[in-house]
Image (cartoon, rainbow, N blue to C red; front, side):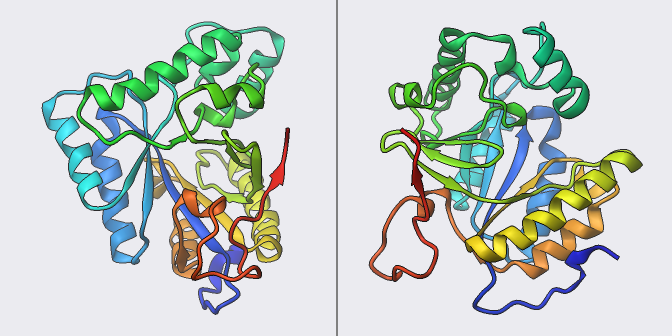
Length: 261
């Protein structure tokens, strides 16, 4: 049994940031199913990572607007979420071991990454959607762009594998993350170990990210995902990582950041 099988919570349970990845026209039915599960488990708010470069029609865009009206946040998540060419040996190795063929940033230089990020942000306004504050590169691979350069781009926050960067201030919040995208036995073993380590780290840090992909309910760690949703009950928005609010004291884990500039 996975270590998430204990589902009891108390006041020491980490605050969680829950996101659903790879939101694009062809995944909307699966995303709807995930949101139904999250609603049933009283998980709110949820951040939806949207890939703009697909065949978005009026019906699909209306669904995004509906989700925003329900209080879910939209975030940018690349443009095509697939690689058209490889950017060298590191990119090829990354694709083979980690990202397969989705880490599109790794094929670009800093100027190309900036152009992709700008195009992604502009798409939301062009479709009549609220402007997103968070950008998550596919496979969390930001590529060859300095963190300081992100302050010149339109998103307020950028998510890395190790945590979340506030672009304007340069503050970086290290936040452990759980994942469930495991379609082979080998990947399931690796992800189980990763999650076990990060559950322990989350207890110390007071924060945790839960990243869900559209097919996770069909894959090998589906039950582990359901258990974690029942275990972690204190949900927050990404903005809470770097903002100080009067209803939280200094010891509650809010705004736990380090300056990376």
